[in-house]
Image 1 (cartoon, rainbow, N blue to C red):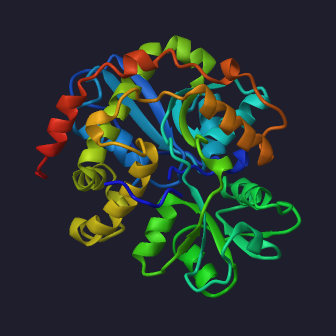
Image 2 (image 1 turned 120 degrees about the horizontal axis):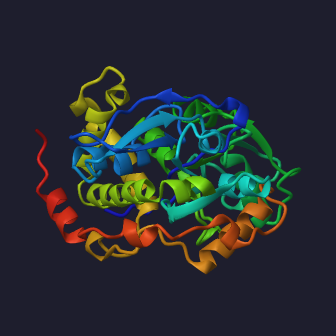
Length: 368
């Protein structure tokens, strides 16, 4: 189940002016809901990542409490998702940790409330026959990033700095997007390398483009990426709703790690636009591969699902590594006290579920 590629999700950091919210979800479960929550996905469209694993599966499999009404919206990147939470257009989002820290430094009253992506998802990729073999070889080269406002830009600069280069002067960053445009930019020689995360790379490889990945240095180990976050006052006002959502999300993640193909089928049912006019069978294998790449970044690197526990926890060492990376990448100017940006008080309640039952349900899953 575990992939050797560790480049997920995902989370892109884009300008707050790019905020583009689109309603795309309804209520969870049956019965009359007396509690409501709005979730913002940090992607303009739904994709085989946290949208599927933490929401679609949770809704379809009954992990969402029947009294909790859940609405989902889409935001064009982590910065936009955080703005949605800040403006109360949404109550919770899974956003890039760098964006959360940057917002907090600017005085935005937002806190991380539970981890999601726990294995660093970003990687530098080149064509298999490229003469680039290490970070030092990137000097004077063009690196394709999703956008200059995305998380791939600070990552590319941090990677160059870790290799002894000047991240501002020694490399040239070019926006190439993801998917076909990014693959075309690399194949045509417009860029010499790409700085993307798991899901886009999986999609590119699905299309037939072969890639070789440069190893991340030790400085990138233990850094947190996509993380659940909410406003401070929302954490107090909607403690029960947020706890119920986190509990359902982590059950959905566990189910998906055991049954990724079934989770992808559920994703297509919940978000039919992901099919892009094709049938489930036409897309299933390729999109399950993309989902698996996200799951590899969002679940422990070692062990099997039966051993997974303590969902959402972020340790002190991980906070310090994440803070150091975010500062080195230029997203924050100084360390932020962890207590100012981290509220783990909901995690005890979020972990109150029977993992064995979730695993058994996943193993027994059969499409309708």
